[in-house]
Each structure stands twice: as structure tokens, then as C-alpha cells.
Amino acid sequence: MAEKAYPPLVMPDGVGRQQVTVWSDGIALDADLYRPTTIVPGAALPAVVLCHGWGGSKLTAERYAALFASTGMITLTFTQGSWFDSGSPLQLVGDSPDLDDGNEAYAQVRFIRDLVDPFAWAANLRAALDYIEGEPGVDPARIGLWGTSFGGGIAVHLAAHDKRVKALAVQVAAIAPLGGRVAELARKRAIDTARGDADSIPQGVDAWPNMAGTPYMAKLAHYDPLAQVDRLRIPTLIIDAGDEEMFPIADNGARAAEIIKSTPGGVVDYQVIPSIDHYGIYFDGYEPGSQAALHWWERHL
Image (cartoon, rainbow, N blue to C red):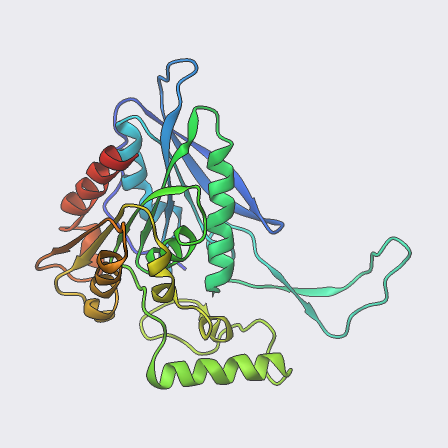
């Protein structure tokens, strides 16, 4: 499956990119680390971890990561597990085999691919934070999270629970929980999965309109980033598309901003880029969106 064709990265002067591996729950995540090519010995630089959206990869955020690194940050992009060049969770096929004395056995397994599991995605993002926290030259007291689309909701969810995140920037973020008939289907999938009446890990079912991969409906039934927004105690930038067609921004970014504003000590900047749709954020909306995030990091990291 090919990722959407975004404008190519033109690497800024003074920035280097290195392919690295982030390990999360035993799964190897394909990642890229961006660093200024010249760092003063002993320097402690701010860092940003970037999270792509549904159907994306580490390349979704490469232009943003390189831009932030060009101003003196260390940044990390990664591909969520089971997508593109990242590793996959495994599912046992058939009955559980008998284990030998070393707890080993031969078994047939299935490699799970292109799965949208929000809690696995959040765990992978946490692992990426662990990685960047240990990167030489990073100031662990100045780490930010950036997320886009479905990954924006994942970033909100994690930032609300991880004190290492000192600032947050999301764009065209899907933050609201499932609703209506889709929510009813998700609850049914959760019940059926728990009772053994559905595959423990779905593949090729419950296709989402115009989206690749398999949504893990049993997990999405319990996923609600919006309910976590009132936990945010960090400066938060939310950018929406004026012509958003994937979901109503009033129920997502705008609602999240309202909640933060009403939270004691909440700091939020809510911006709507006019005349662009959801994917327009990476095209005509790239310049204002990336610059707004850059200024946010310069101000709060």
C-alpha cells in the first residue's frame, strides 16, 4: 500500500537524518532521527516526537521534523506498528501448542498488518518518547509532542497521561469518540471479541470509508481522547482546516480548545486555516501550520 504523495522534503542546511529503530512491546518501529549537524558539546536541546495519522508513516511528518530540527531541536518521526516498514504483532493460528521445559514451542502465527489500534498506537508513541528521552543532547525537561489527524488524538491521549510532555501541537486532529451507529458496532465488536465470537485481532473487516487498513473496533469502543483533554496542564496548540470534511471540527479541535480554556491554568491557542480540507493541511496549509507549531515550540520549549 502506498502512502499519499506529499510534497517532497528538501533537507534544510545544517540538519542530518538517521534511520533508527524504536522498540515497543517487542515490535521494531521504523523511525528517523533528525539532529542539527553541529551541536555544542554538553548542549541540552529541546526535542519533539511526531506522530502520523491513519494510513501514514514516518514520512508524513518528515518536513515538519526537519524544519523543527533546523532551528536547533532534536526530532523523531516513526511509523506505527504493522504499517509499512515497521514490525507487526503476531496472532496465534489454531490451538495453543504444548510448551517444552524452556517455554518454547513450534506454532503457526499470523502477522497482523495495517491495524488501527489506538492503545497500541499510544504505547508506541510512549516508546518513541522513551527513545528521545535517552538521545544524547536532549533536555528531558523540554520534550514536545506533535500529532496529525488520527495521530493528533493519540498525541492528546498520551500528553494527558505522560508528565514528560511539556508542550503539545496537533493539527486536523480526530479527538472525539465514536458516535451513533459506529459506536454501537464498536460496542458489539468489543463484546463479541471478549466472548470469543469474533477474531481476537481483526484483519480485513469493518472497512472505514476511503481509508486503508483495519480499524480495531473493539479497542476504538473504549478510546476517547476528548475525555482526557481536561487533564492537560501544558501549553496546547490546536490547528483545524476550515473546510474539514472528515469530521466536524466543532466536536473535535474546537471542543477540545473550549475545554482547555475552561480548565484552571489551561493554555491553548486554537487556529483554523481557511479554505483547506483535511489533507490540504499538508499542501496549502503546510506553511501556516508548520510555522505555527514552530513558534509554539520556540515559545514553550
